[in-house]
Image (tube, rainbow, N blue to C red):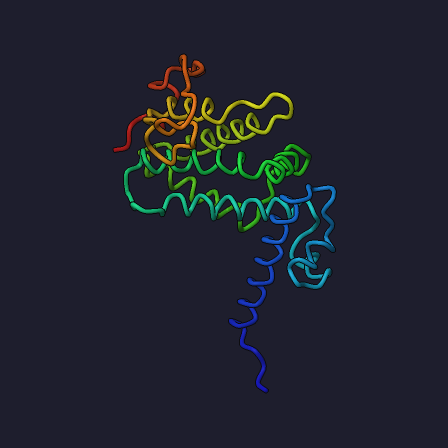
Length: 229
């Protein structure tokens, strides 16, 4: 039997890593971070326990990579869903809705992720995080920003803040209110993107009253507050 080629070995490694990431998302989402062990993850993925150490320095890094992968796949699916579009305003609306949707749909997982980011190690610079960053930066560019290096970190920070607000134990903010604030900041109509049930026509209590006042008027806040070119 001839030895496997380098390409085959690389594909097998990629699949093993993907299984570990998917198992992490599933188990932490079901049980929480503390109740999920590396052995549990290896068992769910059908992999040897030592394989985790080969790919990841520790459990926290594994979780961040797993959530970054989930966020990338969710964002990619939202941007590419039918009907396909090149409208930058629609794409930005879809991106905002996708990230807020994860906070609502996966609260246990996303709380664990945010807790890890706030610890000393901060963001894990992994391939999954880089793919997520590239996709979000490209969305900013397609929206019409001519200062992507400044506007992308701002959007990322605003999305992180909104996710934290949705997940805040004991005092969560409604997704519809946060969505309305972000859409107002970027000049997006509430009909754009993927409106959640509470924002859909006849789907719940509408958001009333003015959105929170931005730190600076939208026209001055950044080039990203412009309409798509």
